[in-house]
Length: 139
Ligand SMILES: Cc1cc2nc3c(=O)[nH]c(=O)nc-3n(C[C@H](O)[C@H](O)[C@H](O)COP(=O)(O)O)c2cc1C
Image (tube, rainbow, N blue to C red):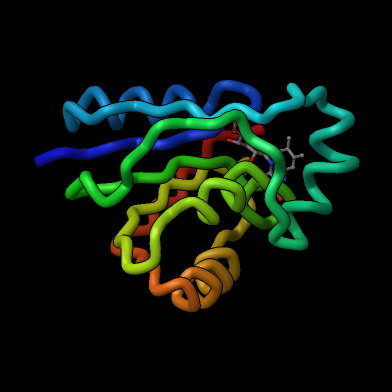
């Protein structure tokens, strides 16, 4: 089965999770990078408000023909209770009708609302969430 794991990681925790998952599944691994590398201040002062607003950040181009994979796994951190802005940038590039599995890492906050919000938002794009895993990776 052809599987891709697409991830963004600010401080390395999601990277470790994504690498482990890809290795276990024999999946292709694609790292998403933002055009402007963030520092911690930018993460809190600009990234977190963007995450709350569901806004996308500028990411470097990446090659992923989502339609060609049988499984699409997206692994991203949670900022301020919401997926990081890089997640929103990737979501914009996923074709309508795709089914995705989501893995979020967080410091331990409750992700129940995040799941519902995202399910509603992605449903408008006809993107189906087939699995939602919340990993408490710590801060
Ligand atoms: C700007 C910022 C905001 C965060 N907000 C939350 C939050 O609202 N709830 C939570 O549980 N963790 C929060 N965290 C912790 C991260 O989600 C957690 O450490 C994550 O695993 C980091 O992944 P990474 O190392 O791949 O960047 C935040 C971290 C940062 C940098």
